[in-house]
Image (cartoon, rainbow, N blue to C red; front, side, top):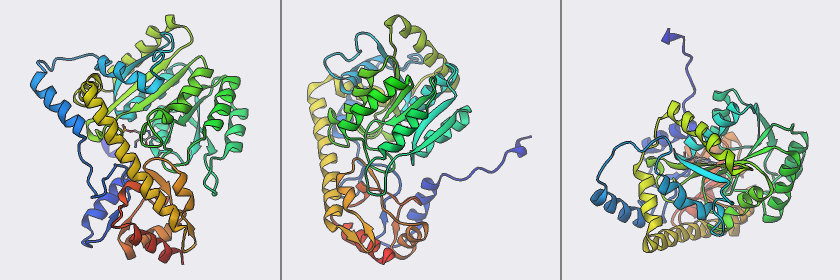
Length: 392
Ligand code: PMP
């Protein structure tokens, strides 16, 4: 029976890591997988996380089960950063639970909407491929609209049309900040409009916030999410700490539900708990506990925020340098200066992406997506020259 299973395509980005590892060229550049890198090309453990982990090892006295909701101290400590310090639970209308990364959160959110009777999810494309993959696995239909224009701005007309075509009972999945793969985010004025459109259309927003703090700042990156939440009765929020705490493999995330009436919250969340039980039972504890310890300690919190500032500033420097280059061959790199987060798309076709790899040792996703943190002041000139060469 097992032989009935069809071969599935390998994850393209993971395959790229292997190709990069096997490349003997000393000056190869890895712009594939989405992890932050320092100017030296490292992805270190945050200082604040190291300190919190040391404390955890010294002080944790049990590893007994916590329950499907995970470490609620972690979940609650994060809320002022996500929803604002003034009223993090929006008058008791928001509750969360810990999940294995942002992926676990999205899996639960989408399983919950499916269970609630939704069948269509409106998604701007291109998007992080796992959005469509999870929807497909759950039997949810993805209704696509175009996310961005070639000029490097969001395609508001496509979004307006998608919402105008939505049926009551549809959900819309939006990236809160640092859009993956384009780096092209909505402006605050656009978020103001989007919040009103979603509220008027009575569709359910699912907000995916996987890069808070990597775009413009912790507060700035939450603008759109908070604006939408202020306008609607209900929403789901999928959060990842894997980038902004550098915890990738420790799988740290949270799912939050916002409902209109606080009396409904426990019933709604019981579905999250019950679905978690059926998927992974309980989330891994270590990373979430480390984040909690950082957020419970003022000194560690300040150090975490300082490290996040450093990361963001480094990515801004790289982006400024790309924009300064202007055009490389026929590729315009200028819009990358104004884009946010780890990713941007270089306007290259498949053959050009292949030539970047074979001829120049520059590894990037087939879509032309690059991890801008893979660029350093030491390799960026080579990268720009390679783009100029393959597009000449
Ligand atoms: N949402 C988006 C848009 C992402 O790009 C990612 C990961 N790269 C995630 C969610 C999930 O993150 P993780 O599961 O690694 O926490």
